[in-house]
Image 1 (tube, rainbow, N blue to C red):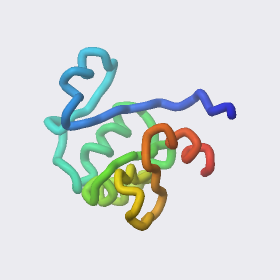
Image 2 (spheres, rainbow, N blue to C red):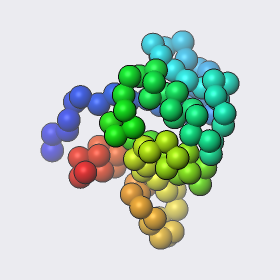
Image 3 (cartoon, one colour):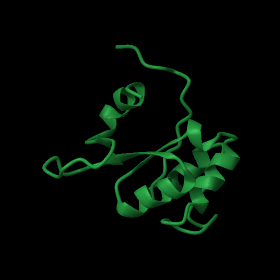
Image 4 (cartoon, rainbow, N blue to C red):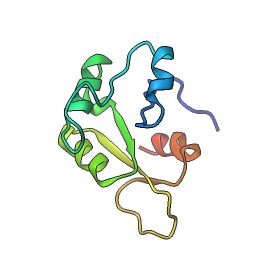
Length: 105
């Protein structure tokens, strides 16, 4: 299967941004705006990357991620670690599934 190659990827984690920040041209972190569930950090990321909410996808694994995404008007894909939980909205169970999920829309 071939995948689209025109994707802008932004990785974020409260655990790893510090080690990644020196390698990223542009980034936002929890120090830059109000924390989730406020949409401020997502809105700032949209502004910094010059993209619209309609062009963005937010992948998260928690209720606050979903709430922030909804408030910002950004598509949300839930990264569910427990396969036995019922799916709510778009769900992937690992990042390996992400490209296929993006292409289905």
